[in-house]
Length: 409
Image 1 (tube, rainbow, N blue to C red):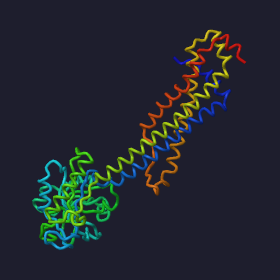
Image 2: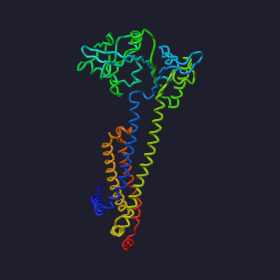
Image 3: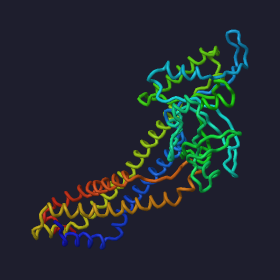
Image 4: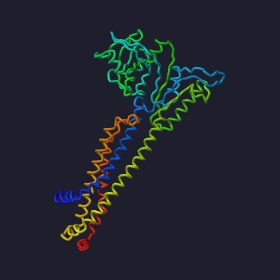
């Protein structure tokens, strides 16, 4: 299976023609290097855009009330729109399977204390579905439950950094914290990929906040996720329908853009996906073009090598070498040079990405790197490229007649 003499001859041929081997490898190394850098930068851009959505579900819709800017149906401009629990129920019940998860929000700020430790935190009063919209990962205890809402329980779920601030080395789960003079039991501790600000939040049941801190059914915001089976266009049509229905519900002029604001993450996701797809196609075209140029370059050099070794190959055939053995020798030499040079370019490219990765953040490129799939794909491409580059000259070498070769000068 492994012909030592054959490989010895291949290495001898490469060592005797160092300049030719170097030129052969350079074109492939440069092609793979460029290919790696382009893919790494594209991945870095995609990482940056994905980071924008890291904290929220990508199928989120945020609905915020504002003030009217146009008079409508006898109402003057400047009227404040106020969402209530009944609006939450309307959205939840009237849009059927278009809604996956939905929650209201009430915002508060309180001084929180435990024993001698105290700090001011943002409070979010929510429904249980909120956990899935914010990608909140509870690692101790549990999240807000439907029973908590029904019983208006004085319970909270705190962020990882809230626990570190107030409880130091003590476990927060099961303890009580003071919020504005009222004791709340900590039933859960969570972490959030959105960063430190998100991990310094405190969540409580929305019914509890409405009863204690206002004695009303007002909500500050309504968030939801649309059915993930929807396409981007269907999701955008759904948000337009929501906007229209809510404007009708609050007697807002159809062209008033400030009274009811609906932001759909589908729009941003669609734009990002389109941009990354176009970028990926361009990179593939540029990378493959460069790689093909490298293959053509090494093929031309191998053709020259065959011409240079015409007499040698003729002698080999005269001594009994078969066309198959000559084709194998030329192709293996080509595959070896291409593979080694390609891997060198790949390693240099990965090293450069690692070296300059942090400095590219100001250009919105985060953690530029190449995936394992790219490395495996590059390996396959290199082997195929080497075989293609060596095949044409190998076939020419195999067709040389010994008598013609021996006459060659």
